[in-house]
Image (tube, rainbow, N blue to C red; front, side, top):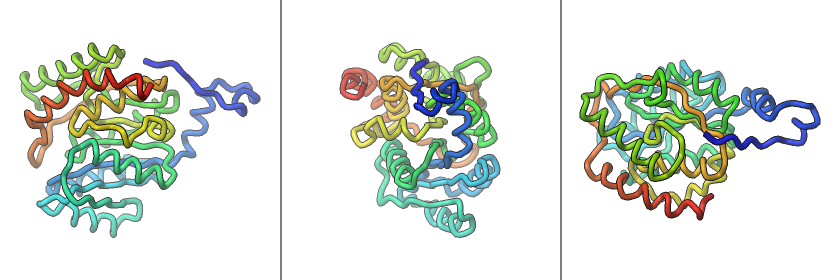
Length: 265
């Protein structure tokens, strides 16, 4: 975990610890939740409804749809019409999870987001746990919803899939040399300045290696990264996006991420 904590002149003058100042300021930051979708028509309405209920008043939800053949984008359009706090970013084709998230981050940053949440569209990340991440961000720069810290767990996965997932996090942790238990998870909350500082446009990972790379870049920049336990659920509807190509990309990209680290550190 990184302990670098920027302190403003105002905080010093007031005699406030840096993170006390951060806690006071967090409530004034606009929160954007970024939810990438591809063929999530069966569950997107339930997901957005649960998310809107969990988010603080005044938060925004951005659905980033990669031209889903099942009509997810059209459903998202209707949700945006029904809920002023929901927006939809249509992209012409599916080019990977990483580019979808980056497009969403850039959209929110251009609209003065102060906090940016990322999470899956299939309810594998429970919107009811968002308040736990928000509480922890008061004393951190990045908060990871972690399956592998004490209290975290995975439901409805077989042992083989659990072992592959845990191995992936351990592999990335060993190669990159950072003390983070769940590097491959996708339930994360960022302060906007973190995303502004890590050169999003130079990230090349497209699949789940993106989750590793973005957290590693934040770590290299010296931001404080915290993990809070979550329960991760297998998707109830639709098909998993995990493929052997995604697994292989993650395996070879992690060493490449380490080699490029000096360029972003």
